[in-house]
Length: 602
Image (cartoon, rainbow, N blue to C red):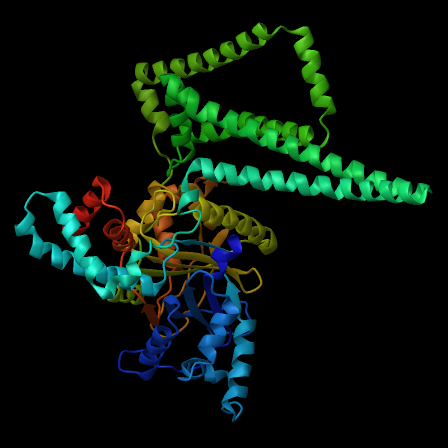
């Protein structure tokens, strides 16, 4: 499932670039690449940029990056084969500088060598998010044409039907049905399991339980089948083999141990989820003091500036919170792999202490925490001057104004009327292997949640993302991020700062900016090293340091030299056109009629 997401977003990272290609509007390369991607018809976005070399790299020539965001189900190797062997030869023109002598005389041999090189430079996304799910570029364009046609027809019919919404929608539907250009729309718009019938929480939970049940059945069969077969053979031949019997018994015992360990792991996972729900959702909903305390802790952990309050929260977290969390996780691990001590401890405790005393102890503990929170709240109100000093920032948030290189400004201006684009290149903190491992784990989590839960073009609270993907390149030394999104850069980052903060912090916290030269004349460089804004407990702060984060992101950005957009439509427009298709050609009801009216008036 995650592999499918990663394969939709690929980059070709060609080292030692010494070519001289004209990507301007007046040059031949831009039109050749546009025609190539239009003809191949499965590329939704493409861009080309130069990545500056590391200062410690042996080869100081820049790297050429070709970014491709393709449609679902396309194998990357098949994609490259289509591009390389296209009759136009545009890919050879782009990469021909790697063959100073002109390459083999035969086109087939030349393309074969180019294909082999590109496969070696291929980088699948280590993590990614797809906004317009289950829609090809051709489908998006056809549905947009349907939307435009419906609006034009709707203007003609308005005066005829007035306020009669149902008759108006029926008349539009009849005209669409009778138009042979829209025969394709009579089939419902394709939707994957997660964006369609699997979008409900119950379906997702049921899917997980089915997978877990199949896992238990498989493990049980691994132990049961050898035991059953060996028993049948010994019964049939009337002989026994003690050595084989001992091996079969070991396999059976290991299989059953894995089965019960898996069941205990599920129980431990459910218990941890319940504990988190109880502390962070249920109790805050029931008790206002608890809610204020939880909000206060989260606010202090995410404060973009350092205060004595946030400092004390962090210290208490290290002294109390982290040991308590590690103890809970340790108990869960012990319960999964060796439950006997925990079960004996629970049995002994329940035998000595009645249940009502345990319940009373829990209630008293919660009441004590509420009283402590109320006491500190009273202190804040009673000693206002002390409270202001305690919460007053004593650390400057950012030391300089945000800088934007003219080449980045120029690229953003060129894309002002279409889908915006961002290329960010950072370095991975030392030790590179350790940091790269944590980044990959974080990206797998982000990719999973984007694939299963955020299926309508929103990642957390951040809307309008078409394709966003991360790549760990140059043997784990650098971190490349490419994003295609609606709106402007400031609003794009604001959505993450105010919404999906944890995922964004996890993706960037192990990165840094080291000094580097410019990839070409007129492109940005970095003279002063920069660190990602500091985090607290891995998950908090980070991107909440708004000015520092925006400045860090701006410094990491690189301009594109070429850009291709197959559809040039926003996520909102794409969703609106798909919904109109289903409403116009679906059954007539109030919901579909309302949607048709909204689509026309939007």
